[in-house]
Length: 394
Image 1 (cartoon, rainbow, N blue to C red):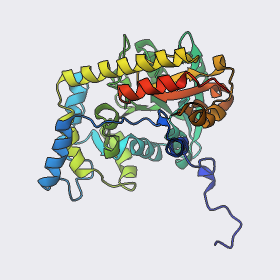
Image 2 (tube, rainbow, N blue to C red):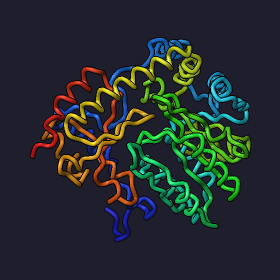
Image 3 (cartoon, one colour):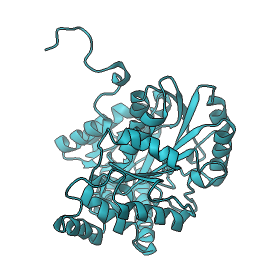
Image 4 (cartoon, helix red, strand yellow):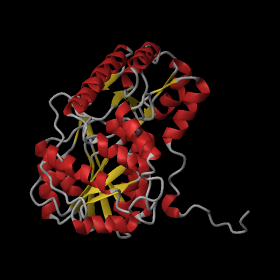
């Protein structure tokens, strides 16, 4: 016991308790519900990638500390992937850094580049680690809200521009966007790039869902726009693309100066991680295009299955063009409080979702929305849809 009345948790993190994912996953276990809350697949990724990890373990590759920036094979594979898909040409030795998933990459980038008091603009609703990482860096988060309109969540570019002040240091951009499933358009990204250049802002862009894009949407890295290469930290990871979320292999690309800065913080977080898995992810990034096409087609079908089930259950559905999450509006069910709804849903319907309000500073804006993950087996989604027909029953 401490003899002081001073709180143990420092004030920067005082607002952050147990994550909503832990709470909802615990509810799923205690009630035997289908967990469509936390975003992880319920099957493993490609067998050849798993076997590559096993081979690395058996061969003794990565069982000891890997190099601080990441193994050369993975850094080279990341650079080749960027060039093949987007025409970017990062130097594997100076412009690629391997991290313990995208979450560490986000934290390291903010700790390295944000001074106490700097403002960081993030698109609201946002992945929960953004707010915590900004707080740990001593920054001040400034939300710009994606507004539900015409069947999707849309960015108001005028609102974004108006949010920039003389204290703004960074834009934290996420596309494809979690939790809304919005994919920013070329025109929207061009406007963001112009604003960043005009106001001399750094940009951290979270692109972990880069391969999970549907219909006519297109993922375009912000670093490809004029003036952005030397001011953009691009983050991605293997977990979402290859369905090995537990491996926690991510990466950062950017100019040598930016990568050096991010590495300065990252080396005092995990230092290194996931040695054998790095070799496997290097092989995964070289899989044929048929793998990535098949992944998109499979997830698009699952999106449509769950969306139809939600609509039949009475929800209003915002069909995503990216990620593997669907946002649904509970107001047609006569509900307005997404947090209370999600806490009651396991008992009412045997399904777990996540209340989107927890991803907002302006919680009242997100109150009627809930998020469902569709990265599950088809049979699981079919059963969830059947159970959700009773979601509106009191």
